Length: 138
Image (cartoon, one colour):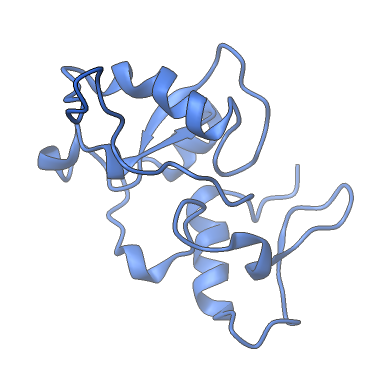
């Protein structure tokens, strides 16, 4: 899970924040900022990218069109995360945290919680892997 930069809400030619009529309309702006990769498993998405809601739109309809609630996800990670209610501070988020510090990456293995960084909360890191399904062995 690489850190990503979503940044502030994109603006139109007049400098006004874009208001999306449909959350799927944010897809191209997200790709411009973050690349066409899953924000969780990092797979290259190309045409199979979903606008993912950090806090599920089914449980938080007021956040359905909020830029700060969007990430990009592959269909697999998006469905694994599903509609689980999340308390943001209980997890590491690729747009908010330096996720490279929280996890250890070994070839052909799922990410592991690092023990090398004293600033990493191992329980928070474990919950993040479980939420996104990154704890599963392929």
